[in-house]
Amino acid sequence: MFGTSGIRGPVGEVVTGDLALAVGRALASTGVERVVVGRDPRDSGRFLSDALSAGLRECGTDVVHLGLAATPTVARSVEWQHADAGVSITASHNPETDNGIKLWNPSGQAFDADQREEVTRRIEEEDFNLAGWDETGDKTHWDGAHDRHVETLVDAVEPADLSVVVDVGNGAGGATADALYELGCDVETLNGQPDGRFPARPSEPTSENCQSLCDHVIATGADLGIAHDGDADRMMAVDENGEFLPGDVLLTLFARQRTGGGETIATPVDTSLIVEDVLAEQGADVVRTQVGDVYVAERATEPGVVFGGEQSGAWIWPDQTLCPDGSLAACRLAELVAETGSLSELAADVGEYPIRRKNIEVEDKVGLMAALSESVTERYDDANTIDGVRVSLDEGWFLIRASGTQPLVRIAAEARDPAAANEVFETADAFVADYME
Image (cartoon, rainbow, N blue to C red; front, top):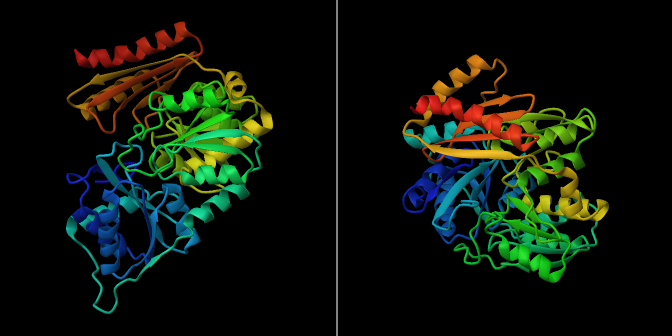
């Protein structure tokens, strides 16, 4: 039922009012007494949040409604409202046909595997603690969440005298524009009207989907462009030349800004080797996680881990919150550019390594990965198997892992020069080819 990013799928098929009601009942039955609920701009979020709230209150839990709110606003509001949990009704960067449910702890960390399993069990067994007629939960509204989020962002970073274009993507990320304005930036927004149909562009902030932002940055001579997904937990960026920055480059910039000697960042197994190379120059370490910001957040709770991120646009500063906060990332990036120079120069200083990727359609990805993991680990004793199988070599690395949502096995290989990247990729591809014959 739950993936690494909560429950997500087509409305009316996977995600229904009945499901939201059951999640509310199950969550309340775990013993939480007060829950914050917010939603992204999708119209289906209105009835889904109503159904979930009904389930919570039916089992005696008080509900604080935020209405339309970015996911990081919801996650942060759990602590601000002295609540026990939070719920975001969102499908994040998925298409407009989808919606979803994501659960948050007071720390801003998403529900972990044990918590998700408990909610799932209660739903499957209909193990709900329905309250008596005079013990049902109350419902209140809090209109101050957006302003509190903006104030928190402004307090977290230094002022920046920049010209910034913010592509809200018709989503819930308006806090970014407000915070940057308060920090002293000249701010212009694109697609700032919340609209769950996402008419201006698809919700996911990729280079293909953000061409209008790139063009607008060039046309206006802005210093920086910011792009969010529908619930603003993701943030990607465009430099002053209209170039969309790769996620690995952004990750490296954030990590280098945050770390010092002896400190550690958490990032998934498919992140570029360049992150390790750059951080090694300042005595910082990298710890690898499974793919997914929930796993990055879990590692970010460990001592010495000061930052976590993945190249899809999820950035976590654990001293602020364990939820990916796209608005905080935007403000931190503006702070970095204002302090150290243009984004294009910062990106050029990081550079890129050649990386090759391939997706292979398979009928039994689970069985294939089990066989591949055994074969690869027999050859490489130090292979990392936390998510697929990843092998570090002198010249680079390769990763073979199953897609979490499609019948695919993915191969990725990277090295410091093109010839080595091809060689490493061919090594990985040969492992898969042996089992595909």
